[in-house]
Length: 117
Image 1 (cartoon, rainbow, N blue to C red):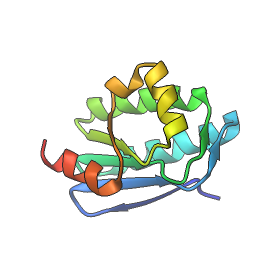
Image 2 (image 1 turned 45 degrees about the vertical axis):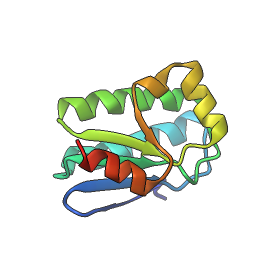
Image 3 (image 1 turned 135 degrees about the horizontal axis):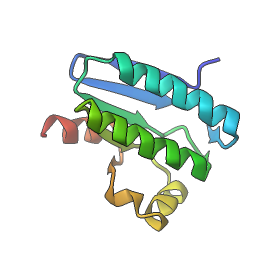
Image 4 (image 1 turned 180 degrees about the horizontal axis):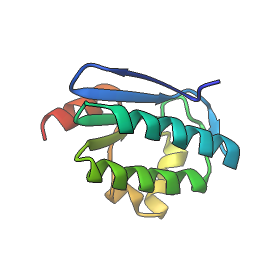
């Protein structure tokens, strides 16, 4: 069973996390592999990660996001995150990751922020 859904339009690849809880190492590994596979094959210059369905996420997932951020920079892909709940945003702020990522409230705003780059 896939933990993500995606769609692309030639300018932006949107990856939506479909699980409400990304907590255990098995799920985190599966999600990371699925997302990395999409990043490896995309021709889109922009990627949005949509967390709107995610209510809980472990700190290990933050580590995977940092790795993904580095990969996107290496591939010259612009990355934005969206749909992050208030509780998860607090974790981003405590770890200062909110300064590293382009975080927007919605897919449309994330998409717009990338297309303006």
